[in-house]
Image (cartoon, rainbow, N blue to C red; front, side, top):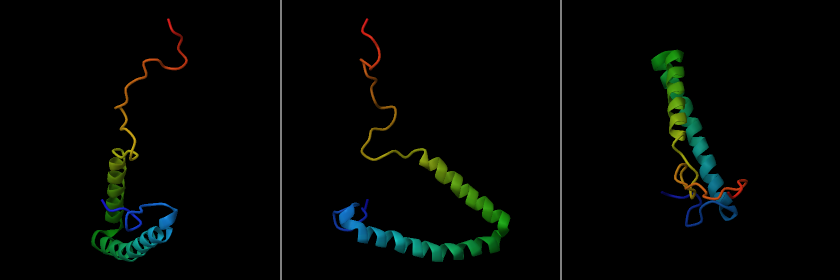
Length: 91
């Protein structure tokens, strides 16, 4: 998977310019194309169809977000319980 920042840098203070350039150029393109696509959807399906489509996409994105986890950390449920937890006295 390609990383932001171009050449092996990734994110960080050494790559601010390239990262911001990538993010804001993608916002420009999506703003220009998104407004045109919105007009096409409203023209084809009217406002009710456009709202149903937007709601469906949002629900799908929310459902897919349930399967995300922070990189570099174990997935929930895979950690073994502590055999000697804090706060319990030895019997």
